[in-house]
Length: 346
Image (cartoon, rainbow, N blue to C red):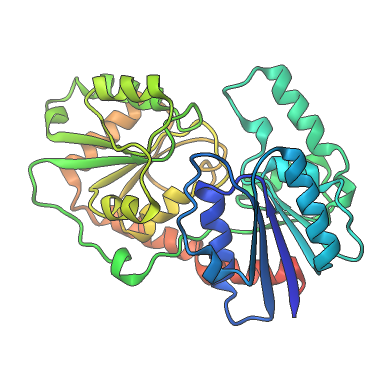
């Protein structure tokens, strides 16, 4: 039996979903999943983590409190594997007592990939990732690009740990609406520079050139920056504000089309959730999506607007659902399970 201690400084959103999927896909295997997470204000932690993990420990307060709690947990538990999640936990993990444990690190999008900070700060984050890297035994990248970046930094070993959206059958089998005159287009996530609402606003400007534009309703499922929310609403986008994950999924599954506009990401779980819900997608080309071999990728707001109109005109076309089925095969629970066993050596 392997004891894996997951340590994360950021336990909202995609990281929470990813960690829960690790526990689910290896349920019944000889792996004990323990969790130490720092809780941050406004993080949605509504998923049933206590039922999924053998032990759950949470920390509030400063990063120093988080580090001290992580150190104590490692010394008390003596895990076989220490699995660090997010850049902050990855950096602090360099200072944890390791003993005989294997140290694994999943960045869930490197901090130096951020595009809302100046280049000098990106360079600092990049240099910090190389500091103490020899103590990390495996970088389990959540995308092929993350593995490539880790290799360029000098990682000992990289393994692709594919994300997987675990949704029950009742949620994941929703019929596509092909008859309504109007369609609902959704975006999901925090209203923040990372998700790049400005890209959507520019897309809406381009969309006005098409007569179909008044038959397309846009919904942003999430909340965040007040000024960005205001700009979206003024452009005619319905913004839900922060809502529980279960409620988000209920609204998500009613969508006709999903747009992904983020400027940078690791491997976006919202894309995988859309695929599991069988919601057709148009994805912006960024590092995390450029190698997906998905046919509906765009690089500019203008081309995204064109693809939205094309979908409106041809949303019954089998290419949309066929491409989703390929996506679901590539990002499956079994592939994630195999990767976890390879990473943990179990």
